[in-house]
Image (cartoon, rainbow, N blue to C red):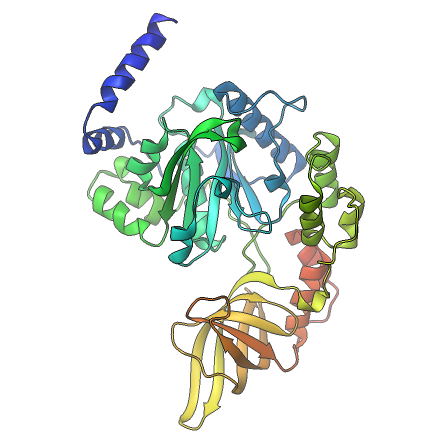
Length: 432
């Protein structure tokens, strides 16, 4: 063992003996956050084959170097979760080169990687969508530069989750040596089952689970950082500052995911370059077919022994959205207009969240804003409350979908990426 490594380990042991709040204060004293980084830095969703491959290679090298995985012949770390339309991979590019990446995984039929080890029941009880932060890596030449890449990547993650990804809770599984950085700087709280000695998703490395409530985070950030100078003010950095380096997605519709995996990309990463699809068990293959049930995807998906019965009628498929709207209804007590937030919809129904109780079984006019320039006005009624088992959620039935509504569902049925959505509606007539 070298003298330098021995010295670092000794200092780390001494640091561990300090009181928790003292350690946290030391972590925070090293904060350097610049809300106006060099324009050579660009943060965006990884969407091209080259960007995704660069992210997967950077992740592979970081995981191999940390002992979190064995080297793969492809030189990439690619998991099944990267194949899902509910996963978004973010990247940081410096002078056009990918130098940082992380993936955000929304819940799907496959759940979350960490839920095999950690209990998420307490997080679920607080309501709100959950996303797992996974696959984080920074290029070696930027790892000792005081967060030059890491902090902008984290800010991008925060802005994306709170604005576009319909996420309230973040969950992570990290090495015990790094958990205090997340606790002290970003206010993550450890999950009930604090740590495990063997985390299969990271080659058996030990892990600690933690969560952050994005709804209460701004309050904590302001309490701790609000009076600090701007370069050390994480409240200003995450909550208030607008970073021009961040390229946020452009969406025609108010959907909550940004899928990029076309059939060609799925085939390249999960069949040609790796054996991810071939190594799936029969159950996971069937789940994958249920998610990608469009004809265009069938040739690249792994064959299944028996046809899945989950290929339901498309008119009953539900799509995750975040659409503001209103419900205008005539009651015996007079006319009422209720503000709604549509959280998912199908051809003949939708589910909403309302802060006030809604009347059941009463037909009224539902005005739903499907996108920046798309709105639907239809006759509807609330048919059930606690639609997903939680107070405030209602299921609605449509009398007949209008043209705008049909265009949206047609777009969702016809493709998987945002380009697909635009192409699916390009030649349809607009509503009068």
